[in-house]
Image (cartoon, rainbow, N blue to C red; front, side, top):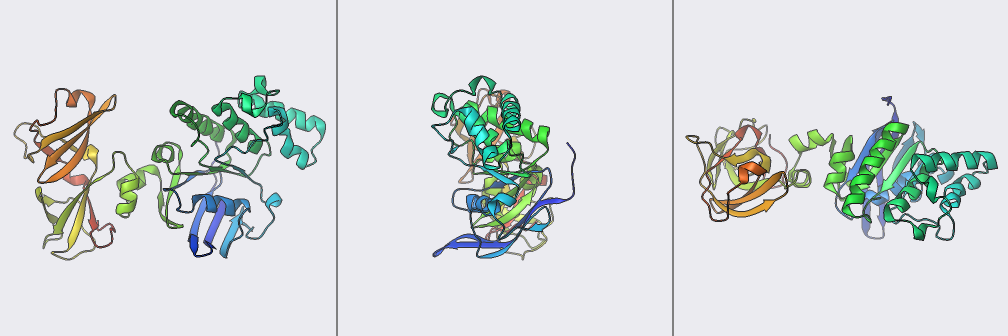
Length: 363
């Protein structure tokens, strides 16, 4: 797939209110052509409003929207080259799959032969050829989702907007559809903006992720960048499963040591801002904790809970009055049981330090 440095989409200072409710607050981000871009965050952070703004379904209070370098802030829906798939599928129940596919093309006054050709091409691509004469209520959830996708793809949009499209599917279908969407993205090279509250979807599908909070983007980056360098405790808590362990701490005079309930920590990451004695939070990824090797400096702990997850096991331990989770390979957790004493080791080169007052990263 060819990559481009051109921006397919740019939002600058977009704000939108519904009465006293502020849905978007100075929202700004851009998406390069051909990107699979994810808007990620819990419910009510503005993801759907952002997509509806791009599609032209919502008029903004302020700000500027550009599509392919052109100002589309107040442009009509039809001229934007954008198509949107809604969470509810929004299929026409009285029409067959063929007619659901054909409807957008008929609205565009396409010829009969072109409609027939593009419907059959789209159906073959989505493995729905054998369902063209069926109506939506006779299809499985996964098939209905593919029809909704096909109805958007058949218009050959510049930008495809997907609003939590897998929420109504069961776990296996969600897995299959994630793979299908990534395949379609590779095949067509189109720009996709995908909104989801699901961390697994965001990390497994997004080439770039924008983490949203209160109608604005808090941090954006690749999945690795967000995981390795969260800008604050909000992002740290949203990226990574199980979520990051947090310990209360006090910053030492040298600005690299920290006093915690588990003893003194020495961070390998220099603190860029902070004062001696300042309250801090130490973030430790569950994957950066492990049982200590014989003779290694260790922290005493007692196993609290065992959660087998197939090839890995989440082990919760109590140490210094704190509960910490660590992720271990299945074989490393074999034989452990609640109540066992297990000395643990923390990879100090990977700990994160946040300011307690506002949650901002100090490293």
